[in-house]
Length: 171
Image 1 (cartoon, one colour):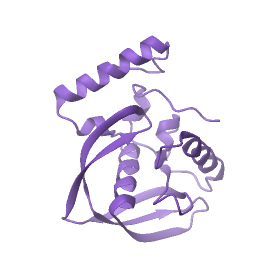
Image 2 (cartoon, helix red, strand yellow; image 1 turned 30 degrees about the vertical axis):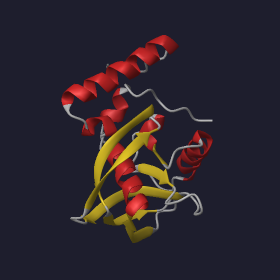
Image 3 (cartoon, helix red, strand yellow; image 1 turned 90 degrees about the vertical axis):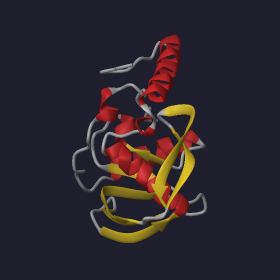
Image 4 (cartoon, one colour; image 1 turned 60 degrees about the vertical axis):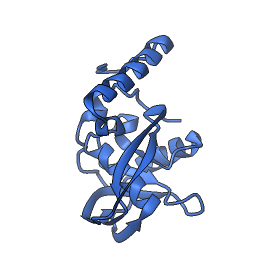
């Protein structure tokens, strides 16, 4: 089972390269890790330490997991909503994040086929969250600097206790 890299791994701050397609093996690893998380709604390749523009997400738990490669957000609605978001890279941390309620997207599936669509509400939020990971942005980057440092320090303390600071770590 693929493991998530620690929150302070430098790869989470880097922009992902265009994915090499087909991406079946990477998509399967992401799906396996997401399903094993029990609580996650999406997972991006950088969270596994792979800097390719691929993520998976559940628009809702009744639909199959979607594989998204080389995504683009074509437009964002002016209507936004602030809601708490969690992230598998920051366990037990929930941060209020403002997101567009509707987005128009284009991406490739694992085979390389082009997908166009409009996402609303929760699905739009999760897509934007995972898209941010591909840009090297995490939810803590949405916080004011002093709050960001507090969250990072708390997670660093937890990792030090567990003896797991991570490759290329920063705290």
